[in-house]
Image (cartoon, rainbow, N blue to C red; front, top):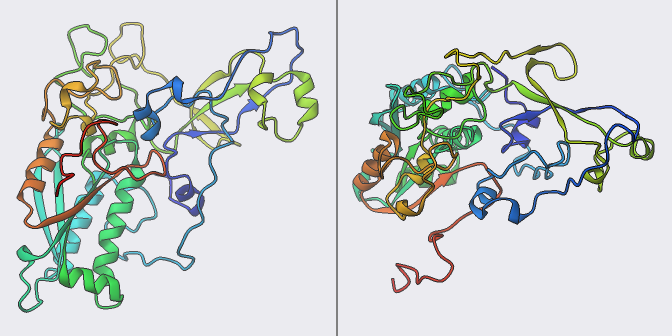
Length: 383
């Protein structure tokens, strides 16, 4: 598995590495220049843009937004000798082992909860961080904060953010004034990875995957069977390779970097997809074979699952996407996913819930309730 380095952390929202393209200067006789404008809001829904799920084929591969400067310049403390040390994206097994290790090592600060079981039989765990030994301050009476992450499978960094937040609270208790105050006076509840099956799929076989692994709803190729031809081997660390061909005049003007302002107007034809690979984009590369698992002459046409767990809740569920092949499919019915059921039941059980946040990694944005309408009165406007 690829290690998380500082440059990798800077590209938080990039789940699919687009390697430096191979461009070839060809004569203008090869093909006329094509209209290749950058994406605008009209090209996708507002929700797709807000969650970072708009198509990326027409975005310059080397012109992403600059990463913000890290606030902390010093090395952040890491766990030692535990299942997670934040050097790589964590698997479902590592996450669960880590949470139970914390409970064993810090029994007065940590309690782990089994919230449910996923479609593939994985435990969905929650954890509470609170100092139980404070006299006259029972945990159940304290203001509570709820945090979850990774509703969308490919948003890997969201779960690491949540895991590190709870680790920081635990490890810095008694050392950092803020961490100590919060752990002694508040109760912090976390569900680090809601979509546990999706976490495995993204790391192992399909880094583009967004949804759950619901096998009951999605016969994608409509042949009467489900999940029989999913992508395999395209997990985290693999990459797509594409060739961009520019006019000779444009190459002469921009020999070092053709992806400067106006590049899309000087393409010859559309970018050519060269396939999916493992290895070094600038060195030895191994192609990932596209396997026709069900022998129907097509490859990867019936992926695993699934349902967009972020759209499976009951709040305006009926207005969601009904297309089962869509990345935003809201499910065959409300609460169809064991993941959303687990979150619902856990949150409803929390006493004195004061605030909550659900981490995603599509865009640098904080969304506040309510977001279903631009005109409707806020349900709690009078509170």
